[in-house]
Image 1 (cartoon, helix red, strand yellow):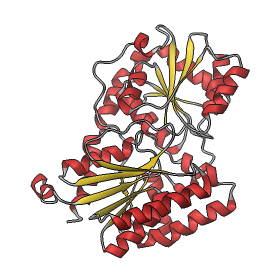
Image 2: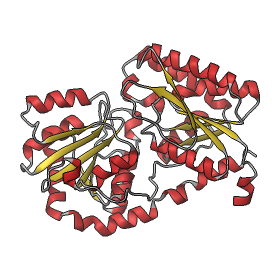
Image 3: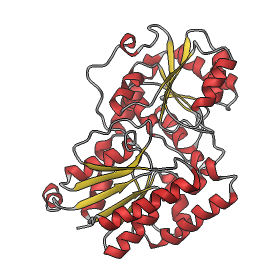
Image 4: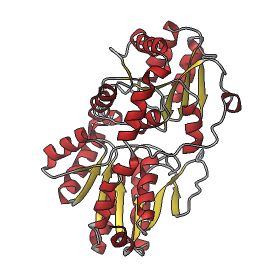
Length: 378
């Protein structure tokens, strides 16, 4: 099969997102598959005032936009993307999430080229639009217009795939957000990272530290935990400013450590120095109810036991491998109780199960779905 893939060495594939490229590990893993198969990817997103430098051995384009959120942002981005795609011909179009789909759909139709849609979440079920009737109507209408016309659709887990299959009567492929096995070397010390040397560090990481991710309750849970327990929040999102204000109001600034978003291997340095990983999405929206975030598999490969909410796909992994504790509810005292269980059992208790979970959930196997799909486009 490798020989067959190599015949596509000149295929040019455009891969589009609405983020700033730097922290999107799912898409960068997909691009790695394209490169391994001899294709030429171009990664397209946007440039933000606080964007980190993007250094990769493939071409990329980041739009500098006048707006950073809301209707004007999405309209501006989609127009820029549409005209960019018109001016630059590609052999394959790979749209990531509903907010990049329409320009890719239109231009791929105009050029008669294949389109792949990778839905990283159940987009019309994200919490940000559940109470915004007009906004939800627009995205839902767009999805209903385009989705039935698609031939190649991928999503992140079986639960979301079933939702799409029930809505549109089509088969959806699944590529989970599983990390590759690579870790930074050498591993930095806590001292080098500016972390307390002996404390028990809870980590929550990611580019989407937003509403309904449970971080407010995790912060308040520190009031019910020993002084040695600290909360390490690495990344960015809409909730971060409020969390900093809350830490001050609760007198917990010495126990909550905020680290801005990091390149992936720099992020893993913090993960490897933590003691327990948090994934506390609330099942208040369809998207979070069926979420399966990257960070869960990062925690697993870094050997961290987890404390998680009972959202469907995360609960399934935690219970199957017995790699951590599920919270009874999002009350801070209940989160604290689950952390106390991890403290009492200690990290070594979960070691064998974490190793098994890492071995059985690996990118080397998961990527075969992409390879088969790209191969079918010849």
